[in-house]
Image 1 (tube, one colour):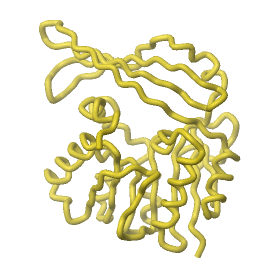
Image 2 (image 1 turned 120 degrees about the horizontal axis):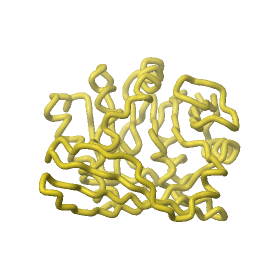
Image 3 (image 1 turned 30 degrees about the vertical axis):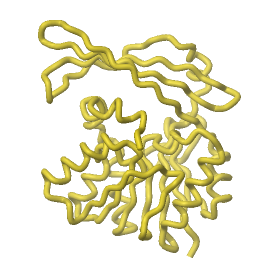
Amino acid sequence: MTDPFDIYARFYDPDLGDLDADLDFYEQFAARCGSPILELGCGTGRVLLPLAREGYCITGIDASAEMLERARAKITSEELGERVTLAQQEMAKLELDRRFNMAFAALNSFAHLHTTDEQLQALVRMQRHLNPGGLLILDMFNPDMGRLLDARGQVTLAKVIPAPATGHRLMRFYSEEVDLARQLIHTTYIVDEIDAEGNVQRTLFPFTLRYLFRYELELLLRHAGFEVEAIYGSYDLDEFSGDSEKLIAVARRPQ
């Protein structure tokens, strides 16, 4: 099984690996729920590893074999294998042999499901993998209609970053086009890798996100058998508003 994120796996850590704004948020809920924990779309282990270091037993799934391979190397290096289990699976086809006290999909991972049927199928499977009273946390972005209407395929420079493994310089651009009728954002990352001699290798990574609105997300959760505990607008647990950057749902499997 291959996944489009295999293309981007080698750039993920230089690009997003040092993002830590959400780590205290997940550690707070992990302390409340306890082990075992499930991360849906764990990537290279950005959130999974800090939780394992804190002593939690955690399972991570991802559809990308390359992402999991990089996570596995870190787990081995830090000798965390007794606390961490990895599996190559898709959210909508989740099938594990255990239940969890907490499950979460960080940083828009749930938005990679592109239809209501896929989203609902994934949520039903997530609910079945939680213990009674277990929590599901979905971290999504709050759709900014102004930005969505302005996305017309223009190419924008996002960041210039070093690639520690090679010493090369990475320039990441992005382009977005929005299908308002289907609530889809078609994105292409363009990564130029520049070596010491100035040679450029370009990688194109196309992917699609489906954005959700607050009450649409709540309805999906309830239809999948969850009780919605809270909707937050930030990692600081601020109340959600129309101006919030984040749309974070915390839902519970009934007792």
